[in-house]
Amino acid sequence: MSILVHELEAVTTKYAALVNEIGKESPTAEQSTELDSLHAKGLELKGKIEEERGQSRTKDMALIHDFLNRPAGSVPHPVNDDKDSRKILTDMGWECKNGIVLAPTSLGKTVEMFGEEVLFGPIPTDDEQAANFFRMTRAAFQPTYRKAYEKLLRNCTRYRSESMAFAMMTGEEQKALSEGSDVGGGFLVPPDVQAEILVRVAQRAIMRRLARVVTTSRDALRFPRVAAHATSGSIYSSGFVGGWVGETPAFAETDPAFGMFEVSVKKLRVATKLSNDFLSDAVANVLAFLAQNGAENMALVEDDGFINGTGDALQPQGILNGGATTVDVEGSTANYVLNTTAATGTAPKLITLAYTLPSQYAQGASWLMKRSIEGAIRKLVDASGRFMWPPLSGSGFAGAPPDLLSYPVYNSEFMPTDGTDTNKVLVFGDISAYVIAQRAQITTVVLRERFADTDQTGIILFERVGGALWNEDAIRIGVV
Image (tube, rainbow, N blue to C red; front, side, top):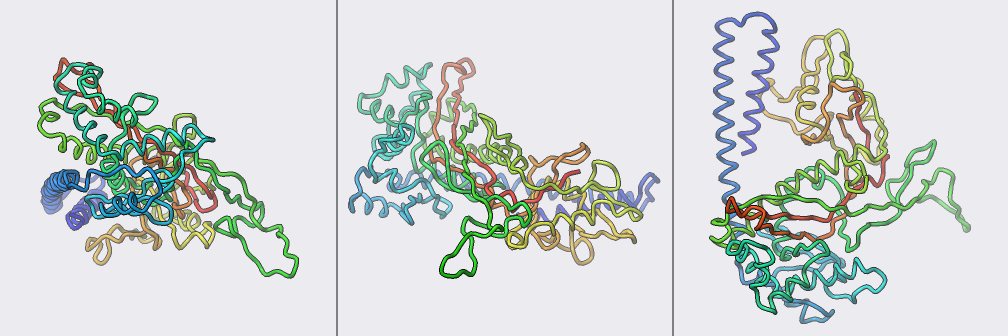
């Protein structure tokens, strides 16, 4: 599909270039024919891409469905730190590495879920929230929990109230679900389904793909952070600093300062309505639907928050609001990424932005911008009217390079666009300096009564996750 996307990019770029060439003049007959041809080709490629994406989604749903129906999907309840519990878990494809429990998924990738102590360690006595997380997670690993969770979904299609659906379950099933419920009344999604959601969120979200993801069992993630020195910046890229010393080493004035870095875990919500016919058809289809479509929407909400979040009580601190240094990239027209053959505009400012990044962060640096802003950058020209960083190489329409100034470019529609003064339109730097705190605690709330008149059931997914910029000196932000 990537070949089709590149081909469509070539067609749209050529179309835009031709329109720009024609300007306000009337197109010649030859130009009109070429425009019609490019337009038709673009629509054809768009249809092929949409068709492939639809087939890909269908295959992915089938893959999840088969995976969740495997016998290994019934995970045991490991309570104690004993060899039998760990062996059963690993026999079913789960892994315990470096103190982290990783879950298998239908994509063939493992997903970090939580620390080993969550399953095998003692219940915390000094932190009631962490203790509840430990208990809920262990409860969800019981074989009876998965069956009770599936029965609850089926019951919701039969009865017009959530309370009735729960009441019609056996005492053992009610007990299993109650142990896996949070204070808000939601039920923890079975661990294997959580893993399917998380692996697809990481696959679809830009920020999660580039940032550093750290698992936590608490409502806040805390560790030391580096603060740039007033005159020398952050010479070192981590909390460890070094130098040549004598017998009595001392800290130097240029060593970075340290503070406490905290990422508060927030609550993310996505919701959908499903027909009761679909729900009653096969519960495994519903679980696959949650993993597929729930992950897609979680990825979108995450990216928005991790880019633009204000850091208030409800939102994470987005990378644009993390205190990184801003660099002017305003073009030849105020508030736009733009230039002309006579006015260099944005072009040299982009180079300035890239080279203000300290060298220790350059190796892992990348660009993050809205797709339309990348298009504006690709149209920047030199004094002879030639594109400085064309979207395609060779003849101008042969193939798409993945970079700008030799650094990869990633697009997100949640990045601001130009046209408004002080908008932050570009992020450049080592985005792994942004830390995402992941608490593997995806819960569901089922709403039957509210949508009974339309014969639908509402399902809400809640995710616990937060984010903040750990080292602001690793990032530069372009402002118009």
